[in-house]
Length: 267
Ligand SMILES: [Zn+2]
Image (cartoon, rainbow, N blue to C red; front, side, top):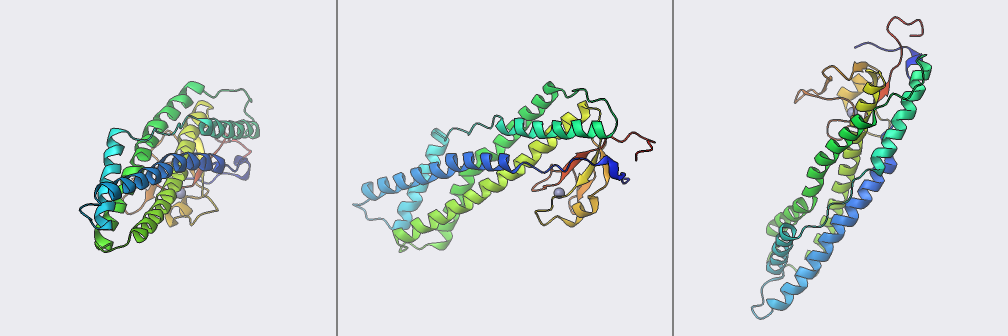
């Protein structure tokens, strides 16, 4: 690790919050809306069909949840389209930073970014992000079921259960927001990597985000220089996990391009 000269850093990139918000809005609309609709409809059905045997509200709610789970397997909500307004915005910001960095480093400002390589990275990101996103409703149903089994007695009132359900939807919404943030950071990291490499900028400066409680290990990395084509530094002392900025869970650090030639007087 070495530290760059002042001239090396010309762009302060941050994970694009607009992209996070747009992904979060899609996840909320798709999953929180679906869960509420399906659960309330299933509760109504349970209330009607089981009225003769008069089961407890908790039993009805658990039966309703089982219905929602079955529906999730049979006819799940359509995955929101992740393509790729976000990716385009991320890429555009990257390319502006790259152009500025090449200019500052005295390199010719030719467009050398490979769209094909970036498209590959975006496609890989979509596959991975989809895996996390698909789990949102299943995890929400699991949480709700656990809560109903542990917290409620058969005598719990329907209103109490409905209120707890709304609270759980709030938890699901926050989960969706964290996921949107995390996946946007990862998209940022992966497209950065592709764009920087094809622009011939193999080094980057690690830069922590100012708007979070930066992890101690990441604070130590702030301002240090690394290479995309080398093994990334250890970002988690406990697990010894390695990663470039933004790659590990909830990391909001970013990579800043470096265009200072080796041995250059400008550094
Ligand atoms: Zn970080």
